[in-house]
Image (cartoon, rainbow, N blue to C red; front, side, top):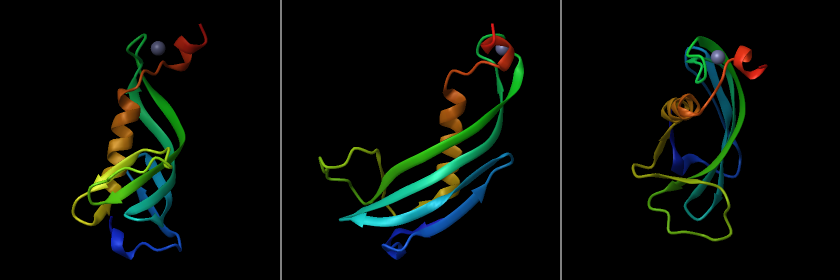
Length: 118
Ligand SMILES: [Zn+2]
């Protein structure tokens, strides 16, 4: 699902995308200058191998995601304390964002419940 950043206004624009087991649901809202605010919840479960015992397990995910998208090169604004992702074609692809969030979670260190309780 691609969203044209120039169509995002102060009125939140909802999106809701899914991968196999994950849901990425939230909204985009115009902030100021070239910046668009993204706020979303990432929920679902991911199959992952445990970083302790290497067994596969289902990692349940429930995360709040919040960052800015810059329409073009981000020139910096010290009043902002969130990450800024730059877009160079005036669009944001929320499916792509979902995939990169999933990759981020998978690359983190996670142990299965058995290992956690020890
Ligand atoms: Zn384990």
